Amino acid sequence: MNDSNARTENPWSARADLAQRGLDHFFGAPEPQLLDNTYPAGDNSTFNYWWLAHVIDARLDAFERTGDPEWLAAAEATSANLRSRNEGSLFNDYFDDMLWYALALERLARLTGREEPLDDARAIWAHVVEHGWNDTHGPSVAWRKQQPYYKNTPANGPFAILSARLHAQDPDPRYLDHGTVAFDWITSTLVGPDGFVEDGINREGDGRIDTQWRFTYNQGLYVGAAVALDAVLHRPELVAQAVRTATTAIAELAPDGVVGREGGGGDEGLFKGVLYRYLGTLLDRLGPGSPDAAPLVDFVRTSTDALWATGQRDGSLLAGDDWRAPAQPPVYYSTQVSAIMALELRAAVEAGEALRPR
Image: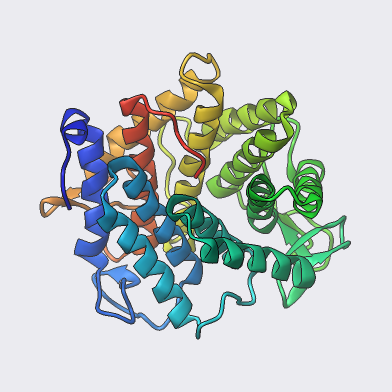
């Protein structure tokens, strides 16, 4: 793909390109697989719907940064691959999976001006409300169809973000009403006094909160939901809540400036990327002169410095689950996508550009 003078002047743009190309270099596979689940290639029997949804967003990051239509074509191809492998359907049993895809589709619609992806995002939102919204432990979205009693941040966070974005496109009160209720449910049920966001409640039907799962993506989702709702509600307290959670997340999960390994790769490999994506939206909202932005930017720089120092391999970039050390194969492509999102944010920070809603 074509380089530009702007990217030559900003080394982090070239490094984001290297991570993007590393996804294809290390994981690329012929259709219908598109991406091997691991490097080196191993068991491809699992269809990772939600990983592909994040690949769409990652490719759109590169398109927004460079303007190169090949990155947009890559996003479109990934969306087509996801749909084809899902037997032509938008839907599956997991509400969080579908919501990730809807977020990517809504963004694809904004960047292309095409109505079809936006219609699909609206269809997913309506499907989630019809099949996943219930009053157990308070009005909110369940995690999956088989467990309507189990509620968590991974489902309600993207639902609140999508609701705010759809309201911005079409001010239907249903979007804002549901999105606000979902966000308030997370706040009252899963957010501690310091702003740290727990994963979920009632997974085993016993009303307990899963405090043992201290994951970055829950923090990122809450930050993203607060910022997205502030964009349509204009409530300063939402930004304050986002700052509190972001600051606490970094202190708790990255005391030395780098998030360590979360679980065993696989789904967990994507968790860090969610944090970086929505830290980007918060930094955009705060602006470069904000004192609240400084520690967040420091975290982005420290952690991506570590990633760059350990991730170079074979003239490309391969990320591990702990960026303080080189990757130890097998590596899941979810892990690589998190690295891409982090480096795209670093490139935007160093370019001094506004970080558009992602």
